[in-house]
Length: 383
Image (tube, rainbow, N blue to C red; front, side, top):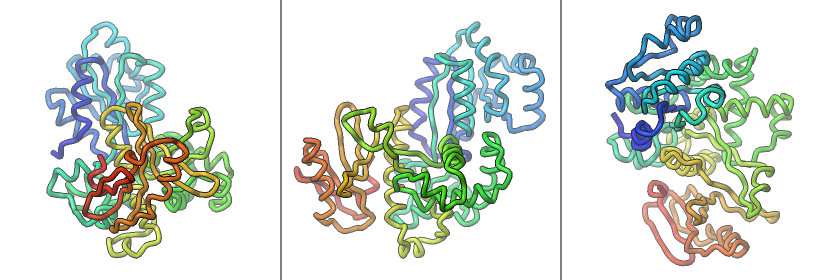
């Protein structure tokens, strides 16, 4: 069992909430982690159609069969249970009584907000972070190999080649998760949409452009993008403004959580192929930004991360705001320290008044270099 950073937060919340909810993308290790942390709990999977039908037809009777502490996996498939769980926890007031998990954030949060608000702690899990993988024998210091394999647990625990793993993963995701949220008549159209979106990882979202390329209406593009976000395949980071309201209305940048999935969608199957790909820089940026996102998620925090770009195309790839301190990062896939990489950081420092002591280039080299005029940090030491 590979140690997961989020474990500490889950066990802490067990003492403070009657219900703990763990959500996240399919096959990121939720069930394995919960069964390991709570081995003394009864485990019930609502993927089993017989159990699912029983729970739907007689939610009260079903729940009365499990008076002991219990894990309900894929609970978003039976929203009828949430009201009865509310009644039970209000009556018993036992902390950590129920552990809920699911791979569809929208359906889970909808049910929790209706029935379990204030009673359930919600945490999000994702595939491994770099820092988690580094603590194992599975970790490869070859950055191209790392990006192509990605961070899904099954790739490592079952020794599956990404080219064999991801095709069935994508089709399973579409059949099980996407169609729970929206009736998409042609799965191939949605799969093609995901592949087109993969070419935009690390870019500012332009829905009009995507609409033209995909041959879909803008409302459909927005809806399908929202599905991918709600099911933890992609996420967005907003532009940085001192005026917070502007952050909410300006166009965000899109990223995939996992570079292995991203490489598969781009048709990249080997480290050698990735080394020659024009997408290598975007994939490396995706991996680094995701590392920041994952590590904050695993601490139970909402990631406060942004990007900055001015009208002259000066840009800072990543701005991280934490505890009143702002750090800014340029992300470069190269392994050589070059002072020109600091250009965008210096422009932003001049405008914002933030010291260059809080500026760094994250790159694929093997040395760290710190100075008051900007630093260079190895990609595997950023968090």
